[in-house]
Length: 101
Image (cartoon, rainbow, N blue to C red; front, side, top):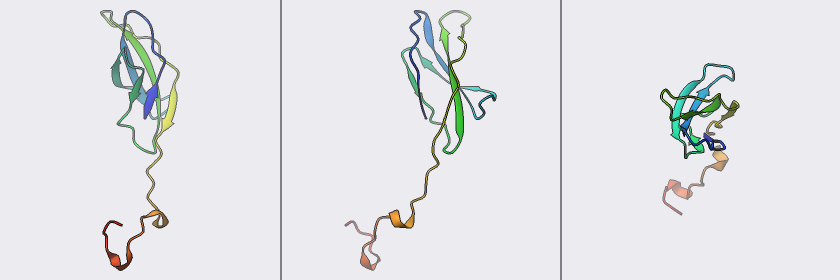
């Protein structure tokens, strides 16, 4: 799942935190932090068929770090992998040979 956002142009921006939940109003968990130069993130842990909800926040370079309010919540899901139907499988040569045609 790939997330995109418009970059923040604050001079003290340190980066972004990405949060995810399986429920729109559920408990969101931080899943990643990215540098301020990034404007996208790929969630490689997303499972097919599961709808996920995401938001992000911006963090600055202050000590302690200040975190912005969160972005709009957005959702998406990766379609489950489909099994090929018998009609869509490659044709096998006559005689049961499995050689390349």
